[in-house]
Length: 255
Ligand SMILES: [Mg+2]
Image (cartoon, rainbow, N blue to C red):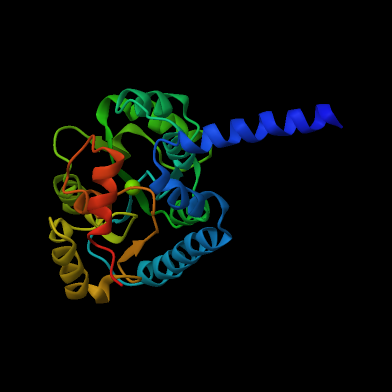
């Protein structure tokens, strides 16, 4: 009995230390939403079911060019929540450790993404994966996509970031030869540069302006862990202390 109590005290002490030493307490719930919420999973299925219905409908219309769809990669077809989970616990060296994570090719498919791409493939539609993973990480990105059976994951169709974060040039490059039926992403900049606003208000205004496109040509997936939405709140500043982060986040809390 005494041994059990001592063990319990040791265990509680460890849990206590571990909890105190979280690197990013503020992102704990954000990551859990991706990993432990079936609602998140349901929203992803909802987005891809909607995308599939739209794809079937739009592909039946007459088009001048061959058909294509554009998908982002991270948090759109592949999940990095395990990388982000570790970031909650301890400080990770970016980009070094993110590159290591990419090399491991362990990003798992987002719910519904594989079924959607297989449908597009079966309809003879070209699939382009436009990602802001750096171009020197194209091979493991393709390897990761192929590992889970994503179709058309070949170098000419996995367009990584070379210099610019804007995906506009890469989109235009695809649109020159193809009729793009759908764009799928978790970040507004996956759709068009008109969403690349620098403030919370500008981004909200752009979404209002283009509201008719969502669920029709633009299919968006939730991402509570990271994205432009968060960068805007953090004023595009990196290496903020937990206190500075807290202050910036609280500024946008409405109550
Ligand atoms: Mg993404």
